[in-house]
Length: 75
Image (cartoon, rainbow, N blue to C red; front, side):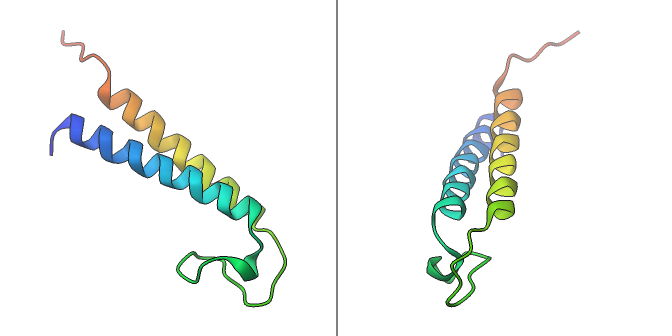
């Protein structure tokens, strides 16, 4: 896979992880979809740490895409 393809994939994954962070910060654990880690039936707690981790991972993926899509310096 070429560099442009990796940049596009990491940008899309970064967006998805940022959305997941927002979901963790706004929806109680008992109301999360069953496929998202952190679902606890009947729980009203918010997964702040899950959201922070997802947000940081999303930012890291954006940074990776940014550095991969930059100009190549050859010496």
